[in-house]
Figure 1: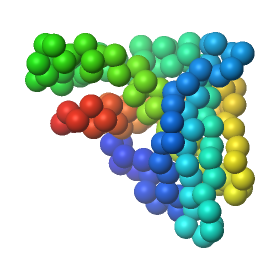
Figure 2 (figure 1 turned 180 degrees about the vertical axis):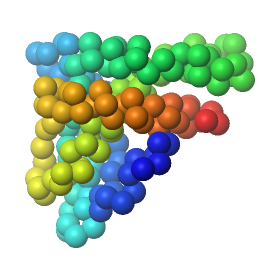
Figure 3 (figure 1 turned 45 degrees about the horizontal axis):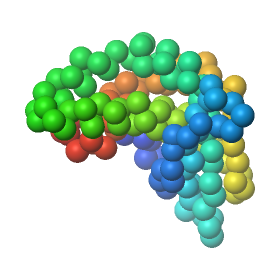
Length: 148
C-alpha cells in the first residue's frame, strides 16, 4: 500500500461530499460525508464517518505533523499563512475520516447509505493513521496547493 495515497486496489471510487461538521447533540464529535461508488453498482451511496474531537487531537499529537507543515508553509506569504493555518484542522479531520472509511471499505460495504459511528474502528484507526502518516500530510498539503 502506498503511504501517500488511499488504496487503489479496492473497487470503490470515493469523493468527499462535505465536512467536517459537528454532530448534532454531540458537540464532541465531528463527521465527514463521502460519496462511495462501487464499479458494479448502478448508483453510489453516502457514508457518514464520525470521529471524536478528542481522538482527532490525540492523533494530531501522535502524528507530529507540525514541523512538516511549518516547513511547507514557509513558502507562503505571511498575510496568507493565517488562512492556510485555519484550514489545517478541517483538512486533518478529512484525512483521518478518509482513513477510517478505507478501513471499512477493506471489509466491503452494502449498497445503502450508512454511518460509521465514532465508537467503531477506534483502535484500528490509531494503527492505520500512524502507518499512513505520509498520506495524511500529503492530503493536507495537496488541498492547500502546496507541494508535498
